[in-house]
Length: 361
Ligand code: UDP
Ligand code: MG
Image 1 (cartoon, protein in one colour):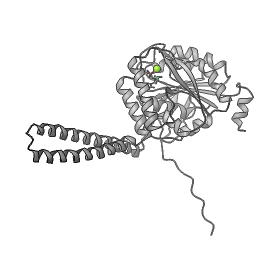
Image 2: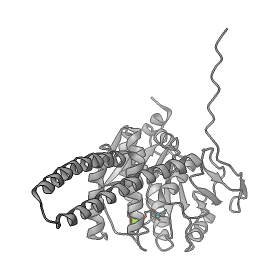
Image 3: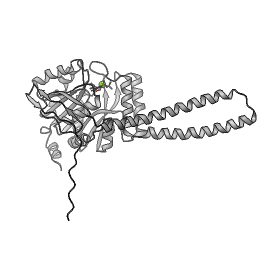
């Protein structure tokens, strides 16, 4: 039995829980979270940390976090130089955690802190990942609910059947699950896909998702579409395959069209059929352009990946004492005025494998 399992079975008080929450222009809602979350955590453990990753907010969210962090060193801030996106913010938070058990949750109170108790029970039962499934949603438009259901259906039927439906990023992980996820350093990341790929023992807990405590969603339609496309293209080359199937179908229909043309030629059909030809050819080149576009998108992603740029850039911190030793993470030289600790800059680098042992003789 692992040391963690022993710690958990002997009671929760020794287990450190780390909460990671991405924050993007959430000035109004942060006070609700910073009141409710510590109250929920003290019921479960004496040791916890709340890592709020400010994903380039411009509304003063970092000020709210700093104020709280000044009086409570368990509240920590990691601040990005600009908006890198929710998935990058979660990655940075996971890179910093020091706890035995880790929770990822949104900061807008749509992921209720009361769920942490039941989630922890599941970890006690031996699960590595506990995911919360939304069985009801308040404050979301009909379109958002419909598109979310459609998204999960497409993902499960065509891309990865292991992705559970209606499960977002609200999850609790054991340390070893987090260590596993931290090993993935790809640029275009979809956390739900990575967790499914990892294949660890996962429990699903249903919950009713309340409306935001304050503020507006930070996911306009354009961002939702971008995330959905990242989810699909980072998990599967299926769209590329689909375009070759489409190409084959088009080839077949062009053979049929050629046959029709020959019949028409000999049967002396009148010239109106040329209009049909024009629309057919336009459709054909449209589909070809779409297929080339798809290919270009994948090539572009390979290009971005080959540059090996950092996944995020940290410009400021609060109550963080060490920059984690993770590849593809850029920590600028930050001075933590709060704890008077200089967090050393860390330049991302390639993963260095140990040298292979020399063969004897
Ligand atoms: N978020 C982020 N970066 C972004 C957009 C959102 O860190 O570019 C955070 C946001 O502050 C929140 C979480 O991601 O904690 C989910 O965002 P939101 O609540 O707007 O999404 P929704 O619940 O409406 O899908
Ligand atoms: Mg939300």
